Image (cartoon, rainbow over all chains, first blue to last red; front, top):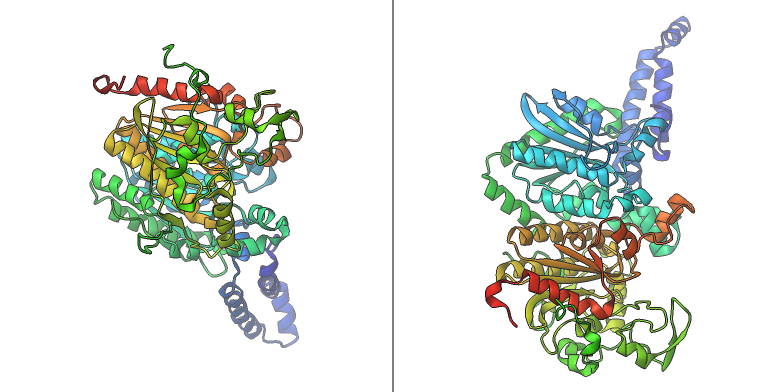
Length: 337
Length: 299
């Protein structure tokens, strides 16, 4: 854990390393021999550690949130799947061209109840990252998730979609196989799935790659995840021709979980364990599990017609505008339909 | 068939820009389109030949030497496409706001308005094409790269919803760099909103024809523009997912020469047909005739 921390995590990681040292049996021996009260020192440092974490995490900038959302120790889709569900069987392939491993999915059981799960999966080590294209799906990945989503709809199994991608793939293969059409098709078809759909943004909610699997009835966001129309680096390059200004772009884009909640685009922000989900996968997963349960409980009461009209209305209202001269100055929400 | 596919060359479109005055009247001079050259002659961006502005007017801004399709603004596009005086604009009162207080956004909107004479990057309304009623939407690349923000998304969603309600075909010309960055997540959500609207239109069995023009990329190509019953494209248009440069950087020199063009998308099954500008109106009329109910065949 100490390795590969983020810059602003440094004071935390240093304190932790010190604590790890002091907790070693040989250090205890050494201290006892010299008549030092190590327990008191450890307790003091533990309190200090807590204070430092609280301080660092109370003042995170949007850019630091972005870095946290990409933290290489952060739980990924398969981690949540393992910790949230009793069982999971991965199914492969889009039945068109390939099996895109940037997307995983299959039937799972949530405390005994059958659900379909799809997720975007980054890799832990270099090899896995390459195999999974760093979690950036090609058309085949979106089509795999659509196949599983429609299976869920057909058999009335709730769909849980975990979002964690920097962006959809934009390489030659992506264009050849129609990644744009695949994203578009998913949004259209997900809007008509005849089963509850709960979306959980667990890390990076990157643009089209995210929304291509994020049309649902509820959208929840982990506290330190981000959701954005463009990565801050890209926005900075366009705005100021300088990718190094990404921190400024991160602020401008309003991409944090709290921003997304304030804009009404996600329904809830799920608090992470102190210091971020990567510090306690189990605690993070427990929060996610509770939130999925709650959402499904609310949604499963709705008849399908009602579910679908609410889902349409959920996206229908997104937008902010004013009405020009002669039409009064209305804002924001669209008129009801 | 023959009649439907007749090229408008044999019946030249009304070239008088004043005939469109009523459509865009509020902001007065609305001729400041990219496609309308100021001078007498100009150099073709594609072949470098010097061409006369007059000739370009006759060819709907297609280079007479090399066939390069120059951009058409929304007004010129409507003139080239719909029956004279048939266009009635809708939802023009929707004005962009600045929900994120994004740096320089308000200024960019103001400049785009001055430059194009438009209020937003999308013009919508009802019109007829060879006598057949349609709901039509046309984006204008000159207005902030034709980017899709709240107003664009709302207007196109209303176009699809009205098409479904009134059972009129939807015809949409896109020319857009994608979602509008300055509206952040709200712009991203327009992809979902417009795609869900197309889904409803399809369920209502009302036809939708999408025309991809130069350029159609990003969040527009990856949403409603790729979901039509029939997808047409102008020759040589840039059509793709990511900006062209992004793809090139990722892949070095291994990209085909026609990467992210209409022709590339046709080759890979993403486009039904490439239609030169002079034939577009005829092609649309042909399809509308195919889709139209026998009982109200206008001709």
